[in-house]
Amino acid sequence: APSPSPAETPLIELRGVTKRYGSFVANEGINLKMVSGEIRAILGENGAGKSTLMKILSGIYSPDSGSIQVNGQEEKIAGPRAAQALGIGIIHQELALMPDLNVAQNIFIGREPRNRWGVLNEAQLNRDAEAIFAAMKVPIDPKAEVRSLTIAKQQMVEIAKALSFRSRILIMDEPTAALNDAETDELFAIIRRLKSEGVA
Image 1: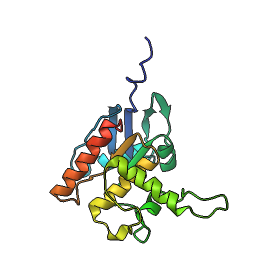
Image 2 (image 1 turned 90 degrees about the vertical axis):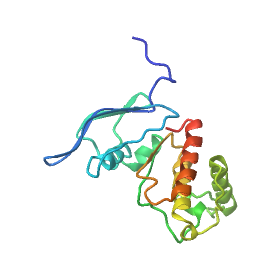
Image 3 (image 1 turned 45 degrees about the vertical axis):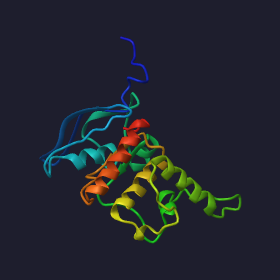
Image 4 (image 1 turned 45 degrees about the horizontal axis):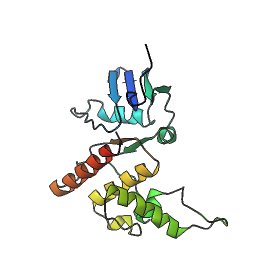
C-alpha cells in the first residue's frame, strides 16, 4: 500500500501503550492518533491513568510495552529534552516557573540570546518573548515579574515557553483547574488559535 501523504500522517500515534507499576496497570493497550490542528480531551476519574499517559508522551516515563510514532517514525522518548526536540511540549497542572525571574527570562531560561562576548542580550530576549505573545494575541509584558501575574497569565507564560521550543504537540494537564470562567474562556480562545495554526 502506498505510504500516507504528509497531511495524513499523524503528528503522534500511540499503539498498544501499556504502563504498569508492579501489579497496578495505569495504562493498558492505549491507541491514540493526533493530527495537526486537532484538539483532544482525555477524560477519566482520578487514578484512571491520564497523567501517566501525559508523562509517557513527554518522556518522563517510558511505556512497558507498545510503541510511539512521531511524524510517522517510531520513537523512544528518552526524557523531556528528547520530547522537546520532537516538538512535544507539556504544561503540568503545577506550573514550573521561577517567580523571581521576569516573563522573558522564564520563557528562554538556559537559552537566552547573548552577544559575541557572552553577555545577555536583554533587548533581544524581550523582543523574542513579545513575538510569541503577539502570535498568541496575549498582552503580557515580557519584563513583568512572574510572581506579579495571575495563575491564568502564568499559564500563558507556560504556553509561550512551550511554543518557544517550536512545539507542534501541546499537552496540558487539567489546564482549567485553577481558573475562573473568564480565564477559562481566554485559555480556550488561545487553544482555538493554536489549533488554526496547526498545533495539536
